[in-house]
Image 1 (tube, rainbow, N blue to C red):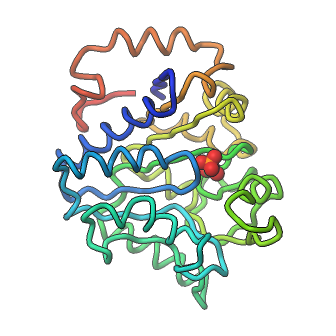
Image 2 (image 1 turned 180 degrees about the vertical axis):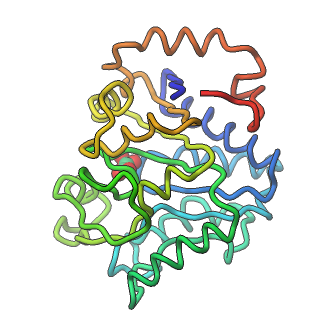
Length: 269
Ligand code: PGA
């Protein structure tokens, strides 16, 4: 795992955006795995700025991690709506190339299989963007999720429903079920970038970066992936015991291995 710390979430998001931009420049038909929540919003703003400066997304395909069951695409709290407002409405990705699970699917199991098949048909994910829940979830894979799981229905924990209540008018409106890519689906992505900001994420960051690999902390499975880059602000990195080492590694990277110089095919973790 490569750990890159920045003084602020904005700076970390800027670096992460450059990582994604470089991939899209090198592979214009890249397949991006996207995330919702508060964490990636600044990254999306940076991508929008880069697009306004000329970065072309016209051949890109996207797949989001998850969607609430029971919310229509135009519901103010649906992840489809979130993605349209925070990213898709501002880039030139053809609408039919942006994919989220359907929260209203009649046959949820069949829909989950179709989602997996669509990712495979697109050639697999080139990079998956992740945030982490305070309980360690990635996507909506809550603690004790199978580390080999595929896209499926999940039941949210009370902790996640409480964390996400800020997006809803009333806490009880947070759905109980969702469709989420599985941990196995996420791990199949060729590259993964994880963002975590703020001191409320410091404990879980320490757990998934430096603790044991365990289904109790689903994000810890990233230790098993060969190409993960974790972008942290100072607050989220504050409990890492090897923080000095991670910063030392990053400062001493050969130029070709830095975000600016990194080639998507040669980077190592
Ligand atoms: P957040 O959520 O970005 O809103 O903190 C992260 C997550 O639940 O994955």
